[in-house]
Length: 75
Length: 514
Image (cartoon, rainbow over all chains, first blue to last red; front, side, top):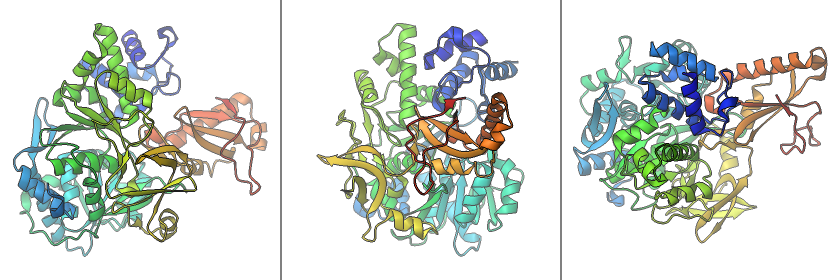
């Protein structure tokens, strides 16, 4: 999941994939804006075939948060 | 639609129902795989049922707040209110509950239409906002009243006479003093702006509405213009799903703010690279294949992005306006894209003059003032009716060029207006922060903090940084995500101040990033 997310992240922001860690914060560290972030989540919905809850996703701050959330809804 | 027959929002909805009848006005997702259509005619009938319901409440004057995302239910509640000569108060669904209560109180709201997602806030709202007598959920609900029951239990009303000078809506906008101000817009204001340009759309058009509907820009340009032209409005059900909904609805026109236009452009580049296809082909696939062009507003769109879109065959027309002007002051058409850095041509019926570098506007679209705020009204409107926009700029060949802001409003590229004072005021009770300056740095909201020297001296640097981050996290919890403070700078030196001890907004030195 982490590797898949890393690959998608580099479509939205100019980041060296090796510099992305589970602690990287989307907005503060990776320079995502709010729409980049929402679009990334939409792309993940498509790729993984899951349905996300908008009230929940706004709480995701780090890559690790997103990985944890995605794994929880994929089950 | 013949302009001479349209004086009020009531005329606009009625004539749209007469002229476009059974054609789909709204399309939205229902159960998985289902698209629900509402025709112009049905929309008018349903709105009139809400009007009948509101008339039956026995209230002398109704101020109905509407809170939620775009949906036929939201719009039916909105138009049902204004068709009967009552006043809507559209609210930002992302606000914290305390702020919502404050606005409901200040706008004298007595009827509340709400999206059931905000149900957890209801107990607090009910205890604070005692003027609200009626709560109606926009979705079906087991507890209390809901819109579907209102529609099934009321016949369409015989509409009362409504005039152009009647107040239709109080729309809250960020004020420079930190407190949101209620912009009073009449039926005549909205109608003037709906007809201030021509040949923008047609019944063959399909729009995907992605912006928040409580913003006048979205309401006027997606919702009202589609009533005028007979276009179909498709509802984007989530900011996460713009890409999916572009494919699903294949819009011909889309209204964006620069931030979304940038994000979509990045997706086009990524698809083009990944699939090894030209960007124009990638754009066609992403936008669903029928797109004629994009209208952009709310914030400044760079000429580079205009060129980038033009290179892939998509015209992107930039306009300029503000809530106080319902909102359009200037607009561009898709067949007249300018790359000169201007924000479009001044719309019909609007006069612009420049006073001390500031853009001032006079037009039938200009608001009546700020609700219960004569001081702010006197600041914004001159005695002879000119609206002081607070924007600096000039006019050349009927095109407006913006050069800066007179006031301290931060305008983010998603079109959100953020008052730095509003955020600075949140630190008032934080003793550790002696002085705070909020500004936008690379489009990111930044708080620069000079800590109280005594309190800071008792802490190690790590402790100080961690305390400040905790404070910011707490403040961010009370803010809509677009207004959250995302960058912090810590100063060791006091801020440069004016002789009256106010912090100068243009500091030459900045603190370190933490």
